[in-house]
Structure formats: structure tokens, C-alpha cells
Image 1: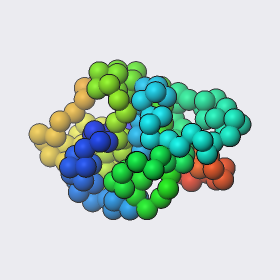
Image 2 (image 1 turned 90 degrees about the horizontal axis):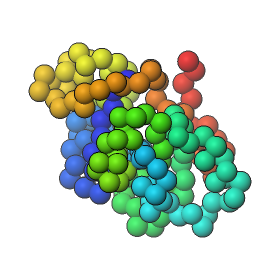
Image 3 (image 1 turned 180 degrees about the vertical axis):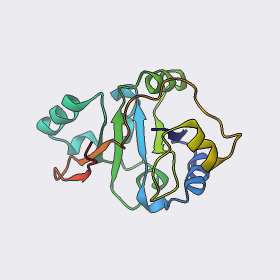
Image 4 (image 1 turned 120 degrees about the vertical axis):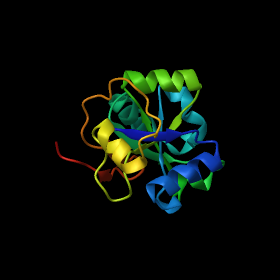
Amino acid sequence: MFGLGCDPTSEKAVKRLLCLKKRSIKKGLILVASNYNQIKMYINESKLSVQQKKTIFFHWPGPYTFLLPANSLVPYWLTGQFDTVAVRISAHLGIIKLCNIFGKALVSTSANFSNMSPCLTQKDVFKNFGKNFPLFYGPIGNERHPSKIINIINGKLIRYVQT
């Protein structure tokens, strides 16, 4: 599936992305990174137990997004109405390369309008967002569903799409 992304430190970029998707800022967004160092500044690690950290690192890199306690400096446009931040370490080589070239994490959200199916082809992207919409060309991977989202604080599965 295709995704949309931007610089998480740019309020203007994030708000443009939210407007494009017709998504409420209250929902928060996912950050995707190539390694833990790219996301650790967003996390309040003092609120994580050793076991919680083991669980997270057992599933990374991969299609698991974890809701972790947010550092108090994480902006509202990333956390939304929550005191957590959603983060994932990707196993996708294109995303890893992009994050490494950019030098930090990126906002990651499915290429779709809120509550609609995600774009699975370039044609879908252009149909929804216009023929001149910029695309990262390369393999998009085999995932046809969004990542699982797990709240590490209470262990609840927030999003699970059966394949």
C-alpha cells in the first residue's frame, strides 16, 4: 500500500498533510524510522519497563506500531489528543533509505482520505490526489493493510487488520 509522509518537526507540513487527507489533528500521527535513535527523542523512556522495551524491540523492525509515552516536548500535531506517540521502526528498504537520507523519522500515514481504503496502486494515488502528486518510485512492499497498533502501556491492540 502507498503512504504519505512529511517532516514531523514542521507544523506547516503536517497540517498540509492532514488537510490533504481530511484528517483531524486530534487523531495524532505515526512516526516511522529506520532505527531507534531516530525516534527516541519523542519517547519518555522513563515510563517504559524493561519488559515493555523487550516487547517493542522483539517486533522491530516490522509492521508493528507502538503507542509509547510521549516526551513532554512532542508537539500536539503529532500526538493529537493523546499523551502517547505512535512509532514504528520499518523493515521496508525504501523507507529505511529515505529516513537515513533525511536523517530522522518521518510522519507516516496511509495514502487515502480519512475512513477510506488506502491506495494500493500508483493509479489510485493519482486518482485521489491528482496526476502531479509526487511519488517515491521503487518497490512498495507486500503489505496490503496498515500496521498493527499496540498500546504498550496497557497492552491493548488498537488496530489489527486480519490478512
